Structure formats: C-alpha cells, structure tokens
Length: 415
Image (cartoon, rainbow, N blue to C red; front, side, top):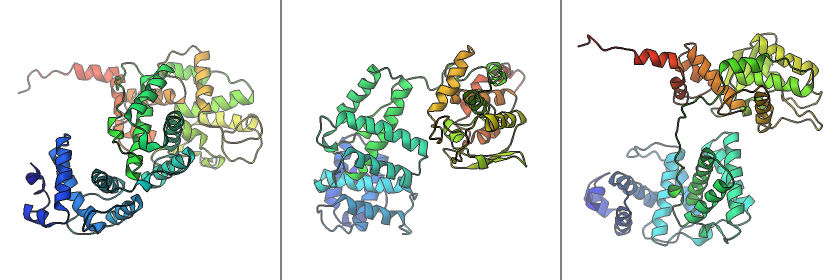
C-alpha cells in the first residue's frame, strides 16, 4: 500500500531518492494504520516533499512553529510548474498542518510553540487570524470570539495551558451548555466555533491532539417542516400597525420595515448610515455583512416615509452618523443584539405565531413570499445578498402551490 502511495506524484524510484524517505514512510504507515484514506495519504506524501524542500531539511531537526509558517507563506507564492494544487488559505493551511503533524510524530516540534500569556492574548491572535487570513465577516468573528472566550474561561481553570486540553473537555463544556438550556442548533454553533479555534490551535502547534476532527454537531433536522418566519399576512399586520408618536416606537417601525421589505440582516441594519439614503434619487445603499458586496435598491415609498418619520420625530440629534442610535445619551450605534428584542417583542404583542421571532424571521418571510409570487431563486439570492442559490433553495419547499403542480405532473404517454 505504501508503495502505491509513493507513486502518486512521480515514480517510486524518485520518491525513494528524495530526502528523508524513511521518515516519511514511517509517518504514512502510521496514518494508514489510523484509518486515513489512500487518496488523502497520496496528497500528504506529495505535500511532504514540498515541506522538506521549502524548509531545506536534509535531516530531521527540531523546528519552531514560526519557521513552518514562513515556509507556508513561501508555499503560497511558489510558482514551480509541477505545483497543481490551489493557492490561498486552504492550500497554505494544508501545508502548515501537514508539516506540524509530521514533525510532531517524530517529536521534532519545539515545545516553545505553545502559547504564552493570558486567554485574551490567545483570543486576540485567533481573531487576527480569522479577520486577516480567513477574511471572515465581523459578525462571524464576533460570534467565534465570544463562544471560544467562554470555553477557554470555563476549561482553563483546570488546565495549565492548551497543551493539556483534550476532547473530553470539549464534550464536558457542551454538556454544560445543554444543561444550561441551549437548544441543538445553538450547540451546533458552539461546535462550529470550537472547530475553527482548534484548527487554528493545531496550525500554531498549541495542541498535541487532533481535537477539531472529533467535534461533531448534534443531530437535528437540517430543514424543519414549518417555515421559520410568520405568514406574510401577519407581516403585513406588523407593518400596518399604527406607530405611536414616541421615539422607541418610531425607531421600531423603521427597523421592522427594513427587515420585512428589504430582508436585511441585523448587522446590515445597524450598519446603515445617514449617507446610505439618497433622498433625491430615492435609492438605498446596502453593505452586505457576509459577502462584503455593496448593493443599491430603489427606496420603497412606505419604507421611506417610515424612516423619515423616525428621522424627524424619533432620532435624537447627535454626531453619530449611524441611522439607528440609542435613545439615551451618550448616543451611539444601536447594537445588533438589541434588534431581536425590538422586533420580537412587537411580534408577540400582536399575537403572531411563528417558529422563530426577531429580524431574521421576517427575512425568511420575505424570501418565502417572493418565491410564492414567482420570483426565480437566482433573483431571490441576489436580493438577499447571497453568493449563490444554495442558501435560498430551502424556501422552495414552502411554495406549496408550485410543489403541488410538480406532484400533479403526469408522464403518461411519454416514451
């Protein structure tokens, strides 16, 4: 089997003549015994040749984690003709991870690679990685930071460093969150955050165990049978209710109109500035939270009137340029987490029945209504700010009229 693996990139003779063949063969045999697929072993065998070349290893020696990262950056810009794999974060991550696991197997990874300092320093390095190298959106980074900060504060009370943290600690933490009342989907979000952190910790050489692969999401239906948002008739009731001439109610009416008509995310709503509204040309500019795209939409009359009422009689005078600000001084940007309370409380006050409440439930209702009216999935995806149609395909099952037409289609007479 190992002989077959070594024929992936070139002939077996060339592989045997490459430096450190015996050390690579021992590691691949160990990986094979651990159940790693043959296709993956071929990729690892090929990558180890580049690790040895770029790190200039004639013999095994103790290596600092920083040296591996420098070699990873050289690999990212490597232009050799035999290189056929993709570039970017994923390729560099594979290079660094392969080097770390191979050197750790031979006890040649320096112990000084372990993180030094407080939990805040570790989290700051992780956040920098997510933002600079992964390019994730600020809401995602904030979520990952909060969940991993909670985990580290919980588990490092009984450990001296991350080196001694193992999968049992993760399981105990997730059990603690379940006992605290967290639902399966919330547990799933904790799992995603912890996997991202431990992948980074492995790249940095902070963990001696492959923890990320062992973190499994709880089992729950990916798509529920009921729509996640209220019926569109209930959304219209929410929009048509008479707004009391008070700052809090005028602000809530403006937020609800943007959630319902433009299906904006919470982070996109709180990110709106006064300059995003072109009243002369009646356009609205939106900066998408996840994709980073900038889109312009016609300003719908009802939405424009609702926002103008808020600006004239509800929004306090302040230097902050955000559209929605706190009502009490010091006036600052309204936090995204506060939108759930603003929208959800008014939905419940009207007796609206929905699986979920808050701004995102209105986003679901808007997308479902657009599909019911015959809008193509591609147009809906663009309207919602998605990169592709995968995320919006779940709304197709809520269009019962179209599904009934598909079910009634007959193949009689077709040969």
